[in-house]
Length: 612
Image 1 (cartoon, rainbow, N blue to C red):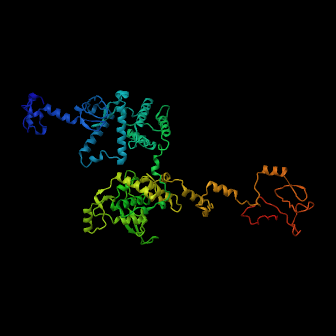
Image 2 (image 1 turned 135 degrees about the vertical axis):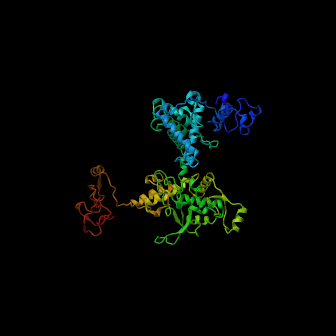
């Protein structure tokens, strides 16, 4: 209100004083400690505006007041904020698009003020890991613009995307309908993003670049978040495939890096490929169950291969209430035998969502029989681990309990309790434990948790006795085509093909692999059937019939050699060639005819062998 009307203002609160402060000391007092008469309207308005005007630093992520933004010391260079054009349009003056934006903002503000609905304003279908990757991609792209703000000029200025959130103007300009300049500039931006990717975990002497598969993952995440937030309409594989575009540059870059690091670059995907080809090749006897960490690693191997747990997240989130013991029902071939099962496990493809409206029943889908007396039995491994759970424990994997905790558990009737309920194992520690367990039991060196799942699925898919429905249910897959990514051609699949083709595999010679010297010796001492006639091509047969003759050593008479007739060297020259005389009995016998079309499945007897 005007200052001259302050004295006539009728208010329930004490009257405001003039714009002049009551004392200079009150300027340095917190506003909460000042009296109403000591604060002027201008000062109050200025203080409120200063509190509301905050800026988020895109370099370090700090939220700082706008008035000291220029003095903020950040390890990364700062972007300049674009001058904001304040417009106070009325609702009647707004366009249709501005009306929709205005209504959306008002509805969001209303929901944020409601405690029950505030958490839904930022709800998303992405998991925590994917959300972090999307945010890191945006931060990395912003850092690329910061590092090249001289070239981007005013396109690098920050504009407000949402209250308190600023992004470079470039992200917004490249959205919308595609044009040639937009495509070229977007290709340059993504190329700079690829060059900025480095392997932060690489030690000295190791490949300093990210693997191609990891680069593609970050590229797709960046393109997805830019599409969702800034309406980017570019296709990573189609729109950038032009001379000087992103596709050609990345292809050439990866070929150069492959020549620089031929043994390590482009091989990181092998972390998920186990060296073993069947679960029976695992050696569970190497784990000492008396040692709690080793027993935990053994359970991780069992859950990964026999229950198809995904990665390390499902191991980390496994609850004690989800692991149950029971007995096979009446009518089952294993009726009355104890089993262990995992129930109510939530996976990414069967959780309730807009598409899935009914939860899947996993009660009898993931269970295996238990043999407590066998140290290598997978079901017995989990059953014996359940005895080590502590009272009040919720997470399945927890750190070892202290001595005082074990004594307390023992006095309360739990003599085998070994874990601290309040200290669950984190996902990073659990990933390391899975890799160590895989190295011990024979899965392979540096094989991650997904390798255990792959090994379990490979075992079932390559076994012809397991139908596809059982494999789909056990692996918690919806589409049968997904399992093709887990199928690998190996010795087991080849043997299955041999059995399907009814091929005699001569299993008596298995394991008798010969060296090249032994193979050469075997070839030299091979017994050749003197009665077998090698087959010739028709041209070779006719040439042999016309050019080669057989001379009788007793008569010096030459006779043409025919593949359908054999001349007895002991017979007289005057005898008919169609009759063969036995030199010992001089009795005429049936003519000896060699049939090249003889088949072992024919009912006829094999041809007679000539006497020498």
